[in-house]
Length: 295
Length: 305
Image (cartoon, rainbow over the protein chains, first blue to last red):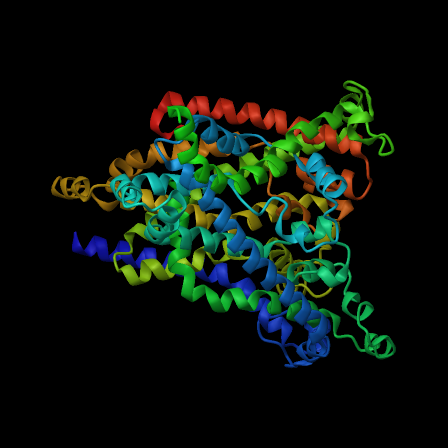
């Protein structure tokens, strides 16, 4: 028996090790390619161990730090503002819905829930945002459409309020003369930190990774997030040079543009913050996946 | 002050709290639902959306006369069926194997690595795929095929490989995530079942076959039915970014979502794109209702409604 379980354990380890490597290895290829010299990529292709190392690609990106820095700023801005606004709106909607005594309780629940079952699709959404709200080429285009609040999270938070915030506590606060709003932020919010942290993390990842809104509603390069720069560059490697202010230097530079490694270097630049932050939040990320799945 | 007035006065601050969220759902979700009427109109921007002429089902007639309508429906459904089957079997297997790792540290370690791909945006995934598949500089063409003595393949213009490529990318990105979900339901199985099985002399394989699997079948059924409810929708990023929006590949990579997007953004064809969008929304909605009905039949508490 003991013999069998040892054998099983080693097989499991071997298999999981192999699968883990399969998950990581494309990232290794990406990073190694970004520090390869142009000649070795052209001759031997992207590889795990380049013939010749070179930081040319990063030098090139450093020369364009203006554009990249700006894009990072945009990404950071929409992530912070979007996540904060999203958390505020989600909890503010979920709390009254969690109350047993709120008038029209079932109607509100249905109003939120139905948005999960049915949606109008891209075309009306696009036309309403561009024609009615004229959101095109504004910073709001990166924050508002689709991402700002998700009915699913509202229902998750509502369930948390119902199951984990004792009504007696709220009743006591009310009797002590605290108004509804004071009760909400003095008692309910502090008790709900675990679920708020989880949802905040998921919202932040959503904003950080979003390229769809930028691709759909933004054509002005000044408003590009880091994901939109990546999205643009994969088809148009000259993008950075074209939008550089140093137009005379740019044409010079284009001749020696290390395009094959730059592609990979800029992807590394987009990837790095998340890879660095991941060890610190992976615990909450895993927990969040399980909460979401078990509704 | 009457009872009603007092009641409203007490709840007024709460309604105030709800206002921003409700307003957002109204604008972001409900307004576009009513906006679906544009599929039945000949949109003329000088007349506005409401003022444009009604044309009935004409947009739909045009849409279903094209070869695209069949291709995008077929691709959307076939890809989803393949994804559901492979991901479910793979993720359940992976979860069972993860559950065999008794040391908490290692279990957490493997979990955090296999869900890492889930964390990455599709744009970055398309770069990773490009590093592997690029015709002139990709890993496969430059390093692997020469060893096997096979000629280079220009992946981004050969449509026959893409069903396999996209399925592989989908598995790579999604299977770890799904296995974490299944692992959670395996961990919640009462250890007494296993103790009893061990006392009866059940081998590891028998324990998996007769204890673990039967006990997580309800979760598998539920997750699968919910996925079937979404079979008319697909991961836009996977089908748009990973093939790099390449027109040559469209026969095997075009799905309803990418068709709608291209018809609207590249061609500006509001009639076709809105008709395809409405087709997707309505069929998708019917499928959600049907799959939920099926979940309800099996287990009432797992149903969405």
